[in-house]
Amino acid sequence: MLDLTNNEPENNVSHKWRLWLPIGIGALLIIAAAVFYFGRASGDGHARLYGEDELPAIKVVVTNGCGYEQLASEYAAALAGKNIEVVSLGDTPKPIYDKSIIVVRKGDMQDLKRLQKMTGIQRWTSAINEYYSADFEIIVGKDYEEFTSD
Image (cartoon, rainbow, N blue to C red; front, side, top):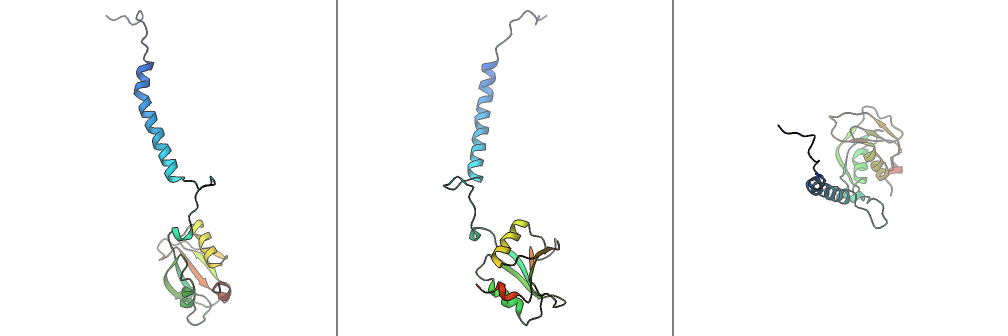
């Protein structure tokens, strides 16, 4: 029978270090690579911000909300050159909009801020619809001239 109480304890520290040291170093290298790749900093030490031309286009439906002839298509033409993809044009059932407004259909707040900056339209509301053809709807009101002149 083996008597465990009279044996000298083994010093397994060096054996354990040899086993875990390569695993720890490997994990640190992976973490460092991820931080470098995902958190690249600009020269001043701040996180890199992407320019609008580096971001995906925001998909919108442009809707004529005030009944002026061809307003949706004219406004869509005014968006040319901006990072906005107009997926369709339409008219509201009733031409009652004095003020232009952005309707959030399935977009997020970060893209809403981008869209507000590009269009100048600050008013917004939310009417979430996961089946809508675009992330946002822009309902063009009678104040459209404020948002078409550059």
